[in-house]
Length: 129
Image (cartoon, rainbow, N blue to C red; front, top):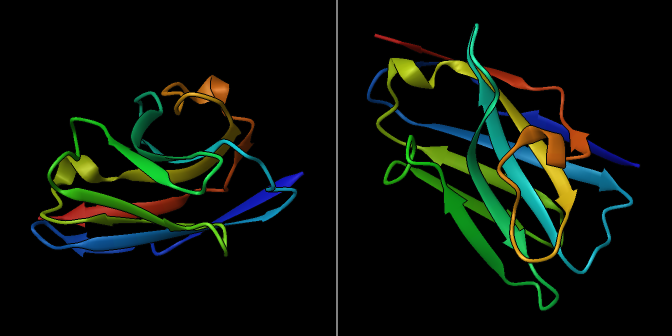
C-alpha cells in the first residue's frame, strides 16, 4: 500500500504563486514510477496538471499540461519520495482541489485518472481576484 499526503493549499490572490507538496510513504519502491498532480474544479472532470516520470537510474522527466505550461514547475526528491508543484501567475481558472497520484509505470506517465492506483486526499486551492 502507498499513502500520499498533500500540503500547501489555501487561498492565493490572482497573479500570485502557490507551492504544493506531496509525500509518498509505504511500499513506494519501484524502478519506474510516476508521481503526478491532478486537479478537479467544481462540475468539471479531474484533469492532469503536471507529472514526473522516474526511471531506473533515478532521473526524472517532467510533463506539463497546456493549462500550466510556462507557469508551473514540478520537482521531486526520490530519497524522500516527495514532489512539489510551484505555480506562478495563478488565475481564477486554477481554483480546484489538487490531488497527488502515484503509478508504477514503464515508458511514461499516464494522463488519465483511471491509470493511477494511489491518490492523496486532495488539497483545496482558491484563487481570488
